[in-house]
Length: 384
Ligand SMILES: [Zn+2]
Image 1 (cartoon, rainbow, N blue to C red):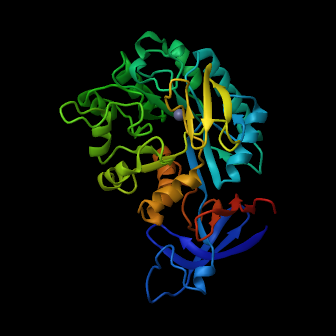
Image 2: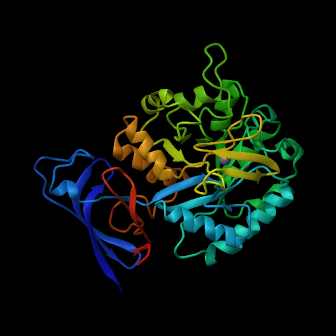
Image 3: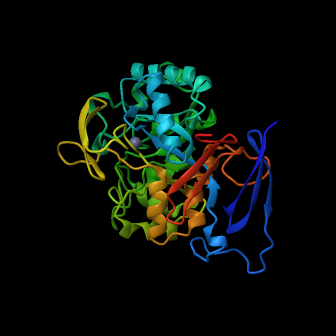
């Protein structure tokens, strides 16, 4: 048995408290908080002594990510390892490789590849939790950067075509207004798959019907969906006003103007916000071009676009999203939860995401600027 201790300013469920985490093998065996008569410290004060201690947060989680570091989720198993390694270096300890819309046969091949890869995935990479399908059941009017040739309608798709995708499928985006969508949402939710409403042009009643049928989440709030229009409320209004609905947010400052972020913060319960990267394989590689599901995309700086200017996905990692949210006034504790505990809770995964006894020892060490300085996965520091 190996054991070690990590001391720092610990990002706990409701506050940041100085203390130490005891780790035995892959698990947190205990957390000892310092007596602190002054109560929880503000997250980012620099008070000399204790301020010099690093922040220790739960490992970050990205449930919607199409690739990173030059490696595509829909590529080979070597690409999956490359993506996982790139993500871990950015503090992501768990993730869902996420497919874009493709022919169902290609999606089945993707699912098979991920299933075979998961038990063999690299120990020095982020841990896969299953996979995510963004498509093919998306509304053509809100297809975003998804290839329209491969969009499908649930009502036209036999269950025998979909059933082979279910094993390992943790999350799928469905537009609730499509023919047969509500029935498919009910069926998948009954099998334990989480359904996220998105890429949708729906009016609000059908959005509510989608959540009522069993959808729990909302794919990249505001992007590729009917929005907040005062006489034509759409999916975004249902997502914002239902306390039970989780919402994903791409906090890269490009997909949703930060002027809107306080609307999300004030409307959603703090445990219902999920930060995602929606990153493409080009993320982390600088400016360039690539093919995404048969469509050409180009990266310049922080923008990744189709030739017509449509945003195609992001080039950030989740740590950037946390920094951006905090810079725009979000409490650090809430921003970290949105990038760790909340997505895990949405997926029903309880063995990680908190600094507490019995949790998997997945940690990220952050400096005063919230830059990633160290990453521990399953009790082992990256690089040790
Ligand atoms: Zn996406």
